Image 1 (spheres, rainbow, N blue to C red):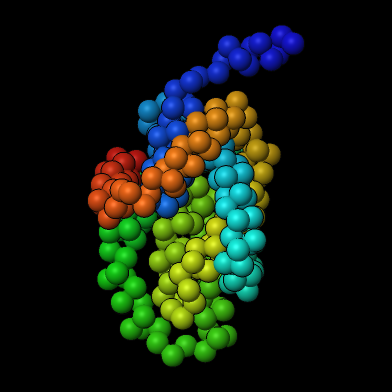
Image 2 (cartoon, rainbow, N blue to C red; image 1 turned 180 degrees about the vertical axis):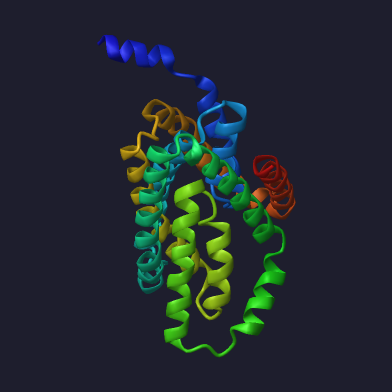
Length: 267
């Protein structure tokens, strides 16, 4: 009883407000919540980078599970692509978590410094993927034309490994970066199936990474609950209004914000 009262007293409604704002923007644009939520937690609320990343990873695992269920029921998941991504990302995630644990034991605050730098780098990459997606797709398609299925499978697993490292360290990158490359690797696959496959892959990736951060002591459960209280209705509202507000106005603004925050975190 006292523990519940203490938790209720420690509840910060500003976390839920932030979750609502981020959830609404995610519903509008589809841009991953980690690209917005983690910097807010670190820069505005002063949450330790390790805690912000670990909490946001489990937050993503919970929210994207619902999206995976919807896509799965609608038949818009290509499980072959999801398996290929996971074959690369899950081993890379485990290796990354072991490295973070080693840094935490041997170098003190080195893990926080690494996560802050990686977060800035990931935000810059994400901003670039949003702003220059069409150019990137054309460039990749020109250099990856007529690939065999085996080569495509290998490149998909390599993409998964890259995302496993980046997401485990920063909680950012799976959505915008992953989708940009998948669109180039699988040009004949309907976009909705690529989106569903990417979301389905994000669930085991963020769950394993978030669980690892929890073992390292990097998850704040009250913070996670506070974010979900605000973000779940925010995502629903944003998704409902998305058809009425053209996201080609919002995406450049979000990308510019991510780039600015990425530069701030990198220097």
